[in-house]
Amino acid sequence: MTNDGEKMKKALCAVISLLSVLTILVFWYMISWKNPELMPTPVETLKQMFEMIVNPTGVSLFEHVAASFTRVFIAYFSATLAGVLIGVAFGWSEIFRDFVHPIFELLRPIPPIAWIPIIVIWFGIGEVSKIAIVFIGAFVPIVVNTYSGMMQMDPIYEKAGKVIGANRKEMLLEIVIPASFPHILAGMKTALSQSWACVIAAEMIVAQKGLGYLIVRSMESGNMGNILISIFFISGISALLSYLFNKLEAIICPW
Amino acid sequence: MSEKAKVSAVGLTKKFDDLLVLDNISFDIAKGEFVCIVGPTGCGKTTFLNILSKIWPATSGELLIDGEKADPKKHNIAFAFQESSAFPWLTVEQNIRFGMEQKNLPKEIINERTEQMLELLELKEARNYFPRQISASMESRVVIGRSFALHPDLLLMDEPYAQLDIEFRYHLEDAVLKLSKMTGSTVIFVTHNIEEAVYLAERCIVLTNKPTTVKTIEKIDLPYPRDICSKEFTDIRDRITDYIKWW
Ligand SMILES: Nc1ncnc2c1ncn2[C@@H]1O[C@H](COP(=O)(O)OP(=O)(O)OP(=O)(O)O)[C@@H](O)[C@H]1O
Ligand SMILES: [Mg+2]
Image (cartoon, rainbow over the protein chains, first blue to last red):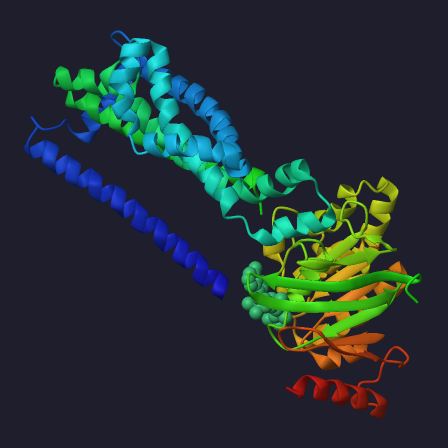
């Protein structure tokens, strides 16, 4: 009975979600049909997308996606590594915290994109610059979450470790880090969407390849179809990444 | 007596700033003895256990185990806290193994004791669950299992059943008695519930209000398992209740 009710509810939810997508498509169709100068129709856009994939002029759509993706990949993983290490050091060593925290708090509110001018002057307009910007965007939430996860740990676990006779190293590796792991993952999740946003922004300013670059070029050439395609890909990939992340989280952090 | 004592508290005193909580508390406990501590709410029972377990330093006084200063790295002390302290990132089985693995016990012993605890505390079916997937009563049992599996020299229990329903309490009390006999551990068990104390303890330490001292130590010389309806039982229970009611 309740099971049937659950099923009904699920089916209803699916229908409503489908309706919402349909509504957008209908509106899009109406607007583009009435004002073709504003945007191409959904079907035309789709055609254009196939064209870009199968028969590209110059850099193909997949090359753009791959370029953005590679940057995110490199920057995100190095930021995770560095961010968790620094975050743990923050949470663990009072001396380190007292020394670095003021600097960190000073730099933290600066939006990653505001670093672009400095980074371009220092590193030029090559790959390093874009990776550096994405790195900054991903690094900050990971440090903050790791650190606050350690601070928020229920002191009962520390007591339990102390009574068992754990030394400082065991306390850190076997109690404090596992206890903060959900927070660390939450930071990594925020960082992942930040990275994706940052790579687009960076590419809009300094790049010859990538989805951000594609958007800007399309804007300059007034190609609305390409702009829409880029936007779909940006949001689609972002959704895909967070979906994959959630799946991964359920595997590595099942509690 | 004092050469034979397993655990001795010598003039334990604890102040939080100006608040004197524990005032010069001394007693001896023999090896394998089961001692309950009762006292009014907020009198410092948890504080007392925190000092015995060396989580907090005492303001003055000493805790001796086998005549030496107590040290968690050397002595085998276990603590079942008032709050649930099962590690949420470990499964039921891993939680029970945790302490033994920390102490680097041989693998066979760890396996054997883990199975024994899972069996005795009826956790076998839940062995691969995480704490958030099980009930509060099961979680308490996990912590009890983790503590007893160490066969500790000294086991401190701070109202470990506060969250449990009555029916299960009696069941667990019997399990705890059995475990304490089996492991030969010296147990200090804190409770609000005088009936529970009289059911469990060989001796019952009654504490006063703050600043807390030992009001009296009551020997409970009844055979196990105890009949909570018998005259002797209710007499002792009422006597201890009177001690606590006196102020
Ligand atoms: N960390 C602390 N700092 C200052 N005062 C404290 C601290 N911990 C406990 N106290 C005080 O010490 C007294 C005893 O507290 P404790 O928790 O040991 O009592 P308890 O007997 O365990 O109470 P309960 O029956 O509620 O478990 C209380 O008055 C409390 O306010
Ligand atoms: Mg308490």
